[in-house]
Length: 599
Image (cartoon, rainbow, N blue to C red; front, side, top):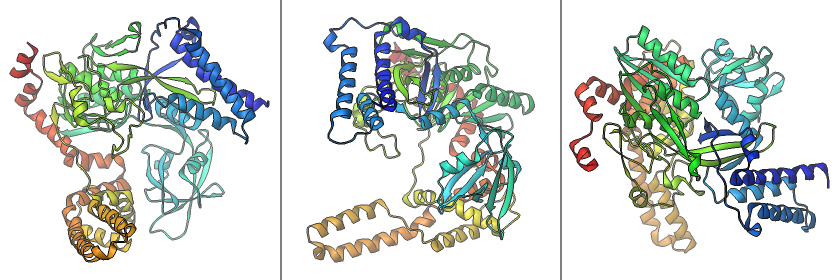
């Protein structure tokens, strides 16, 4: 057997042996340098290692060691005796994936590329030029230079096409390869050849690479006098330091008395950062979260350990369906201690503690769920329907097997510190519900096909001098309509998709002639209704045009200043609530009904 085969079989045995160590809980397991993490959407939250407990002695035939040997024997026989050549790596991967198939959806094998991307997100830095890129019209295109980076200082713009990286043409190149070519040690240089809309010829830039810090605090500032706003999009190693600096700046230099804390679409991050972030607002020695595995001895409690820097100012925490994991710990803890009003829509519902085994040597890593986490009221916010394989995290949620009524029936009643009633069994339910907006088919397809961005690049190149405080005029709106017609923009409504299915079925049954007139009439009716869609989506289209113009011309911070703080419905609702002291105070006190139900 070749060395490669030996290494692969050893890999399989090592990964399976992890299960032996974890389940049996031997003394050796405690000596491993294991990294405890809480994951969400590819971002994880770190936890301290807990005790594993012990498993009662089992019959050898049914022990994990017995089945480990059996699996290795079968893999070896398949590789050596099967009638055709079997790739050892694929064989091992299939075996591992089979072991994980009946577990929760977050217990998976991470390949080196995925593991490295995860570590980069966690550490919050990499070495390169600092830009977001995407593939537009089959060409690597700059979506946005990151503020304060070499790409920003060199004056790169959204819409710039990267034609060459050093001497390598980007024709046919994907974004991953382009990113790898632009990255490199800080202090080294890379030459980029750029094609800019509105400029004849190509432009060459020599850019010196630097350490690019991926900031957690995306923006902070005043909404209006006395009311601050801050948004974080992940919990990485520097999140607490960044957030503390932002809050102190707003307190000391902007005079804020109340705060809007935006955790919408925050997929989570390091657990220790979630605890210290909560500690910025909670008094010392308050429980933030605890974890519980299958063994009673595995419970681990995490308390705040310092005095807060914003101890008593009124707060509204913004959440939505993308608020997950570590960000649910923070929003849930602040709700349970009656420290803030939570506003928005019910959060994602991911409350699983996980560990990473391996990966630091460039090989496969195992991401394994080992416990659940609970917020101070005792709630586990893990949604039951997201605790098994087969759940689809996509936008349509098509693979949920639990019916809503079944999920709702599992919800238990809990109480906050003051006695307010809250529910468990499915994310953090906000104190003030603001339904998330749903996109109409025309809106979704305009976004999906990048037409707002492309129009912004084209329009701003032809109309220089647009100021930051501009408003979208009727002429701009009409110009956008003309632009998408020139680009032959089409889309289908849900009714059209269903009609297409009917047409296909009629063809298969050879009954098309019976329905030709009816089908033609239906298409005519649909086209008539679609002609109204553009005007009926005027507000959404106007806002999207404004957003992309600001992004192209002035960067992400301008979007917050001119759009989020002035037009975002959740932010406006939060401002209204913070200005109504009586209503704010009432929301944080138990109702008469809550008191009666608690007894």
